[in-house]
Image (cartoon, rainbow, N blue to C red; front, side):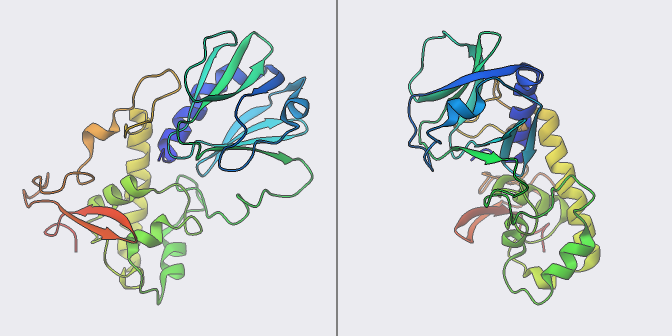
Length: 271
């Protein structure tokens, strides 16, 4: 699944094509995504200027005067800005039509993505209402993690992947940040000290920023908006490196399932 850096890379890629332009409608060829695409989508966006493209966790928010288009790429979704008359590929489910003759085209082979509508009525969409702080913001702090984690017996890896704790730290980046911080992903969240949470917060930010600098990580389906793959995958220390030597100590990387997710760590460097 595309994680925060991939979604942020996508946001940066589509922003120049949308900001300051008007949407003139939508062409929905397949509405059966994770949730149905609103039937009135074309009327809702017609003649609406795009004010901004924002990101909240792994959701993209295309801000219009009357509401926000809420997009999630799901497991395999991608966005491309193309001339509106470009021949369709398989799984090109919908277009947002731009006034300059281009379209923002959503492709999703597995249809786990979504496109929903959030009116500007003062409320927050239920999907966004209970999300934790952004990991690159000042709201994300070691003190908050430490206080929230007290008495928790679950694994620290699951704790930092909980979207109510902090958003956007998916499986890849949780594994990499815990490695950099030297913390065993199986350790109970409530048994991690404040000092170690301070280290972990710094490394979560560091690994996400490194991934952003590299354009995200390439796992199966993800492409940048220009169709080029990201390259952060080339510098992973532990993720998907089962039995390969640790980059620090040469101990074979171990793979275990934690919280139903494959987890990778060095049994020597992480404790």
